[in-house]
Image (tube, rainbow, N blue to C red; front, top):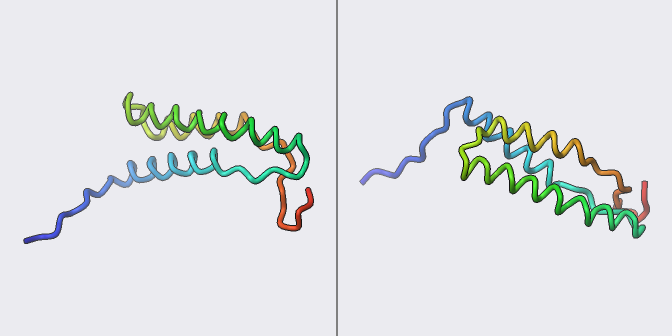
Length: 96
């Protein structure tokens, strides 16, 4: 009995998949907020906004046949449009 094989993606498809995964990672990888209420409120506003955009592009790929390259570019643009503007928390507990 032979072992089942996993289909290999073509190099261009693998690059597109990597770009999409990187875009999703970057959209969702927000630093923890600093200690102020404003920092926490901005983080609480930004995370669901970016998560919804990630879900939109992933649904586009999975349900509508959106090309991964296009999805990655869209999500990267949306992420850049909503940058982290709050002060991130650091391990010393103070804002930098």
